Length: 402
Image (cartoon, rainbow, N blue to C red; front, side, top):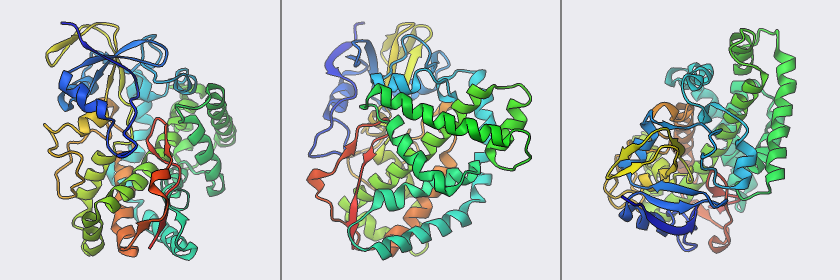
């Protein structure tokens, strides 16, 4: 059967009066089933927005994540320039994907990540102290949310904390899908040049950091080459820095707009509500708002449709996480909801390799931030809040008081 057509270019615009909600067109598309839409370059791509359809696209072995495929649906010229020529493992299929993911996953298991809890607790407490010292009007993005995941990844990789501002700034440019393609490509190049120097410094060493381990166990043994090493570390930096920071900021803003949730966490002395709150915040914010991009390798029946071989397709994580068939009243933030089935980390072999670390970072934040500042409020003009049009949805700045 023919797919219904949406005459709007992806990604869709959000309602400026409800910037935390999905674009209104997402709901319309879900009611139509899988639809055809247009990309920035005129390419026709299929869009799935229901929970079951998106999940099937994510897990099907007959649908490829290969970013080098000519029909892979990049969402902008900047996205293609910054990521189209860089085959990191999120854009690879098995068996190459499994090799590259396996270089990182042993370091990010739930058991290994738990060992970082004392460090993260100390880090969050220090940053909370600095917020208090700075006083009302402080920016929650740059002074709190961004330094937490950045410091955690830097610690895993054995990088100096003094280099974190460089990575944050270059990652923002690299992840900006609305940016100038040349600037995006330059940001990617700058990050790679940095890690080429680190590679040279650590080759032949016996360090216990993740970079040194990858060099010894995978580069020196011939499993991967320097470029593949760079792509993998680059992805870890970008995903590790940007994603969690934006969940912290948007999750805080969302709860301040649902003040009962904030008050409950502030009064939750045993932190019993935090695990469920983290899952609901992940669902509600859905910061990977333009994902998942895929290409069908053969005709694929999904729902009542058949996706043709070679067809580019996007499974909207945001659409899936707001499907009322799976999550009733999805526009309502409900920290008592069982949201564990959300797709914020993806699902299947490509689900986020760092999700255990992200969950620990978020839990550490929301165990402490509401209790330290139970009367936290936004002092920025909410009408003028600037949302970032990047691959990961977020805010450039959020000034808060108490």
